[in-house]
Length: 251
Length: 301
Image 1: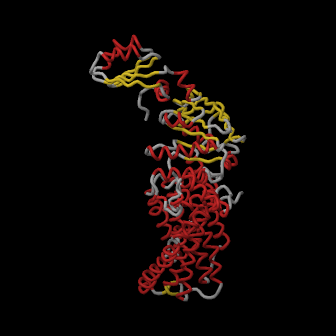
Image 2 (image 1 turned 45 degrees about the vertical axis):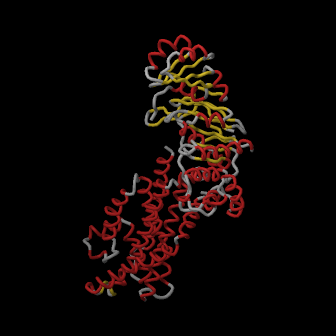
Image 3 (image 1 turned 180 degrees about the vertical axis):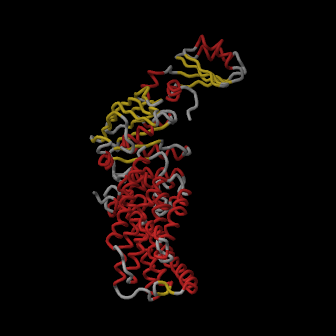
């Protein structure tokens, strides 16, 4: 495997660097609004969950949800702009780069950017005192795995898409329901058993389990399996996406 | 530099490239002419390894394509039909980043930028955003970008389509300098004056096949009568059919114009002078006449 995909990461990083400040502010402001709005607003009604305030519980879930959203946005909308609207991929393929280089580069970049969004939540958690000490920092590599997972799956949609409208279906039919099934906004164990089983087949439940385990000290039922599920979805996703992209672009 | 042998490409059951063979020598400007849909772009994409042929053999810079296409592209520059400059970058950043894809270090790339911008006539636009450039400037920047790796071969797909005459002449000047500097150029076009000016040799493609291949002069001398008289005016059709036909070698009527091809135009011009309602234009036959003769007057979409 060559390291040419790093040129694509470099390209995306250089573009991101131009808009770094607004991007970082958005990364920080968005989760803050959620945590304040839902955490303290809804939290006042809900009371404690699993022996701690709702806002603390929610912050653990938001770590993953924010990473998921950031990975999806980058691997769907931004990557699709580069694939179709701006023809950036086409230009790069005139150089000695392959479609695999480009798709893998997009995958790693989206995961890295998503990790930053997750890290912003971790900063907020430290700020509110939900996270203490150095131990929660262990969640950062897990957030990268969460980023790899969801950008890999999203790239399948991107390489299949004819236009941006397609992504609305992905969010409405897959991402949003998965968000409610996976213990992000409320505990998984209050759902009926068959629904719980279904949730554990999806990657977000594993992500939330790992995130709460590492930042809040919750018990993690299968930590290594959870990590493997995240990476499995991600690697499968990017391989399928590269295959579709090859079919689409070498026609 | 490039050898294509019995190339075949099928899209959805339709053969868009059929048994295509040609070769391009080092330092030559080779033109591929043809109406829309003749298979020009598909042929270029096959040569670059961007799409896989259904038959035949391609060798680019001594390397087999598509097997070694990626390696071959280190020595190749591409000017695509539709601009794909990176709109997220400035003019300079476009050149530097594109060089990176060729494993060229950023420092080396930045040293090359001033000369490339000079060549493209964009020296005063180094920091401009892409959306601030005119169509002609974007084309020139695309050409400069294709030179960032100092390639041996340049592929240009309709390099001046959509440009105004001033912008086209600027591009032509640049391309002539490249050929003078020893680069090999392979370009597709449907502008006959462009092909006539730039190309050492050219082929005419139609429906996926090469129907003629020679120097521009050779094509004109071999395939067509040397003098054309265009006769315009109402009722020119019936007049040409009865009066002009006996004194010309070939006649085509299109709307209110009769195109008369021959060696000696005097008898026809004398006849036309007797008809005050007819206007005539006498000129030497050019590549466009060859092209029309070979591919017909019907619109291709």
